[in-house]
Image (cartoon, rainbow, N blue to C red; front, side, top):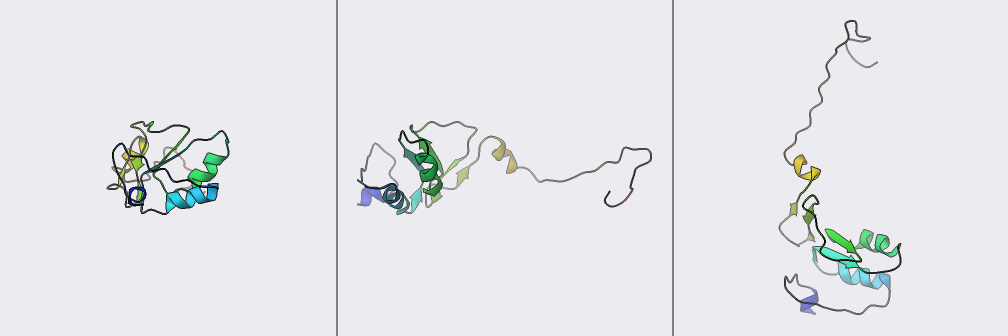
Length: 115
């Protein structure tokens, strides 16, 4: 169905029946988009198995659309226009790492090289 293979932003629900967890994962990964995913379950191990295999940038367990500005956001595949970083990950985009070592001992154990 086109509605199940297109990234639609609106009040649309496409329900596709499945028999096994593996089949549900295959259906989820069959499309070129991967913005978000969710699973509702009482089995505490199931969401860990499923979210590790579903190609989606955000994944919810027993809920949907809970977000925080400190969390990165973005999809996989053709979904969206890249990633939006939040929290400490946002700072990495403006950071270039440099190591600086300053000897402060009057008589250092070594003046060059490794200890």
